[in-house]
Image (cartoon, rainbow, N blue to C red; front, side, top):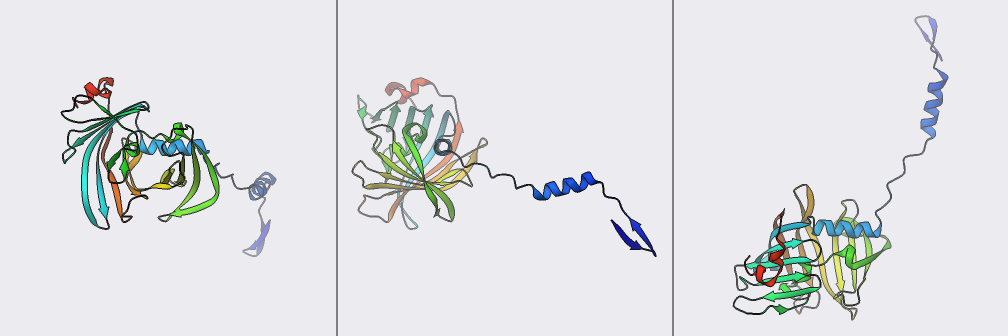
Length: 260
């Protein structure tokens, strides 16, 4: 390659190897985009955001909200261990001292002064439109299979993939669930739960996430009871403190739970 300079021709030699490399780079295709997560991985990611630690304690508040007005609230602590042990302890308010214990598929309400625990189901109301299952029990990767729909949908400005979830067990309170998944963030954006009759029963929107001990966890979500008379009221669940802990198995018994 030559050019004129200072009244003379100046020639530069470009090694053939360099030219070949430049041509190869120009012709090489862009690296492939990473494959989207599998449906099972999506469910595992949703579980990780809702249940980040094998053993944990969190403090929470459930508030019934209509517009900007708070109609009522309840504070409680949640103790979880593994996939099948949970304890909810109400702190203050009209339900103060009540406990909800979950071990495997069994669930009980412990009322102060009562001798025997009362069997309940995961659909038992926690506060407003939120049920016990919303907080303590549900594990999507364990309880559901998922299939992806074509295309994406928008949830509060986030482009989401949509998954249809089918319960693995016949006695599941919600045999069908629709999940909107924010793939860019790797987090759930919305859930809609359906009764065995096919009626849409509950709509859950994840409104805020936070970091706790290096993990991304749900900080706030809103639950709307689609069967309620007043559709304007939503239940806001706020998780105010979420931390790993070492928990004794004894607290997940009716006797041990009363001592918490």
